[in-house]
Length: 171
Image (cartoon, rainbow, N blue to C red; front, side, top):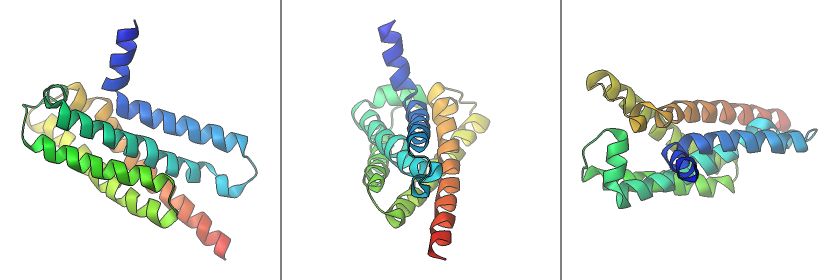
């Protein structure tokens, strides 16, 4: 049983981080109600950058670079030297996400734009793999695909809401 839980946690790591970010943002907002600077989107924006962007980026760096056979198998690929480059890109976005958690809105927005492009591009790649080569491996068409779709969408919405709130406070 414990082996199943651990393997599921790591196989679905991106979705676990997304759900955790949403849960933490909701809990913190509920506990700090009445303070507009701690609104759901502001908190969610930060937690999305830390968990599904930051920690997931570092996790996928580790899997692509140090465990390329496992990573390739989960995605439905053959092992490739390009996994090292993908891992370094994952590390870059992951570190930016972790740093942005503690940054101001401008830094968070810049990190979010990079993550939106990276994850959005990944989502397009997953769809292409599903259509062209019928790759429905769990690492291509499962939770990883859905986080590559949902995280950029949530980042765009949260960035826009926080921007509007900041604009309204300045008026």
